[in-house]
Image (spheres, rainbow, N blue to C red):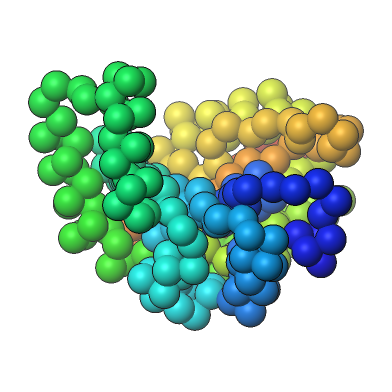
Length: 247
């Protein structure tokens, strides 16, 4: 309805799939189709910012070709999700791509000797892309285990978002400053060699005070973690926060 009823004219509707800052969330397939149709009714073209589009099929229940086929143009990244060194691709109608090639050159995109990036992207397509569904499935196990450990520890308010991850990435929120949580994460890594959480950050403008969030990504090494491994790592992390009793 927001798209159909938008008061001002617009020529392009850009959709980020998934929405990273919102917690790597995705719409339902029917919702996505409806939004695209609403844009068409307004004579607008649709562009997918699909840097992490590779992660979407598990939640949307559709293949990559069908998902990308909804849009007029699609951007994908080769280093996010696929683990490439760098690089991205833009797909769309030939006339649009011809103009994009001109602007790529104008902005310095014709970098000399790109074969290392190309080879790492091809490796990601061959090796990582087929494994992404298993990462997404295991992310649900990890999210449940994190939630259980935080609840058992009586940390007060916390949030694992979304409750059921839409992709292999999700957010964890805790009522401490980013500096305290990042220091605890670093201390855990140095002491145990285990990297559970990385850098924590404060919410953006207008966000709730006194809390911080981090992003948790489940990839190849994470598949080896059982739910109990995750719970134990969370307990160890919490024990390194100020005022916590060490066992």
